Each structure stands twice: as C-alpha cells, then as structure tokens.
Length: 301
Image (spheres, rainbow, N blue to C red):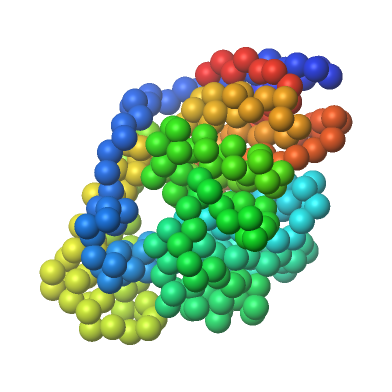
C-alpha cells in the first residue's frame, strides 16, 4: 500500500493507492512480558531474546534514511528512545546512520521497566553512541530534562489509543520530533510469520551475553521465553496500528506547526509501518512515498 497526496499552501487531502490487504480489527489485548505480575528477571530474558532477534534480522535498517532526514530537518543529532526494552535496533542502527549515512547520532535508551544490564551492553558495543537513563520513563510524560528526537520501535501497540495520543501530544508540547516504527501488522501473513520468532530466539540464545544458566533453563528446559515470544508476538500483531490509524491520530494535531509522514517501508525483509513528525516552518517540502500532513487533512484509507 502506498500513499499519495495533493498539497496546497493551507490544506491537504490524501488518498491511498494500490492493493489493500485484508486486515483484522484492532484489539486491546494483553501481553505477558508487559504485565506487572510477570517476574522482572523473566521479562529481561524475553527482551534479551527479542534484542537478539532484531540483531539477527536487522529489520529496521531500511527506515534509517527516513529517520536521518527527519532528524536533519529538525536540526538535531540526539535521539531519545522510548520503550527501549533491551535496546531495540539501536546498536546496529546508530552505527549505520553514523557510518553509512554520514549523520552522527547519539542515543539515550529509556523504558518504564529499565533493563540495566542490556542498556550497559548496548553502550559497550556502541562506541559511546548509546547511553541510558536509569530511572523508569513513561512515554506519555517524558521528564523535561530528557531531550532529543523521540523514537519508539515495536512498542506503540502496547499503548491504547488515548495513551498513544498523549505520547504524541507530549512531544508536541516539548516541540520535539517523534518517530514511531512498527514491524507488527494486523495481517494474516504477519501473524503467521511470528511463528519464526521463537525459533530465531532458540538459535540465538547460546550467544546472548552475559551467559546465564537461568537463560538456558527458561529457554530450553522450561520454555517460558519462546512461549512468551510466540504469544506476545501474536498479541502484538492484533494490537498494532495501521496507516489509517496513524493518519487519524495526526489529523487531530493538524495546524500544530508539525510536518507529518505516515507510510509503510517495504524494502526490507518485513514491512515497517511508520509515523514521523517534527516541527517545521510554514514551508512544506515534498517527500516521496509518504503521506504528508500540514494544516487540515481528510485521510481516506
């Protein structure tokens, strides 16, 4: 699915062109590793396994130019990553943006359940590009002292509609850029592909550092980790937001002095749905392959 747009100085109308895949309706379901009753040490094992999967697949690399261009337009090289889990794609992504795309960035990892060991590991392997915030950070109310272009990878689906709107509103209040990237989609192909995730986790577990016998126990002998990867993966797909959802979200903030891009990046191994917004002047520059909103808008999906 691609997005087309017709823009004028004061208003814009938008239309989607191309194939429309069959979608399921979004459901506010729960995920095990996001639940307060799930033990912290098991949550860290799950996020470590997810981190290993992201490193093996490098699924978010195709969105690097989009993020680089948005940060350049916003005039910043500083990233504030929200809902970071064990670091997400940032070890590889920061290196790629800096070395290949020649745009040096620094990243601060945050989460409402910080994983200190994983954050330290990311910092160690990032050549000083990545640091972390030790205290819990809620994406709906980011502390004033934490600054940077905000990013959320594979976590927006954890938030309800009202919470996600608060995340965007909080970024607007602080006049900072925000980018949301999701590998999950409410499509049968995506739901079926989740079956591969636990197997990738099983293959990657022996190489996850630091080595822990408990990691092997909860992965191979009592397979809690692969079960959670599978169950939460399915729930993530059913909870994910579509392009139309993101268009409806940003339409509520039209006239805020932000430039918005909503689209799907399909050049990688899996499609990545994205929403990008940053404060700009009245001039709107064209952007290919994305739906760009400025002023009032009427999304048609």
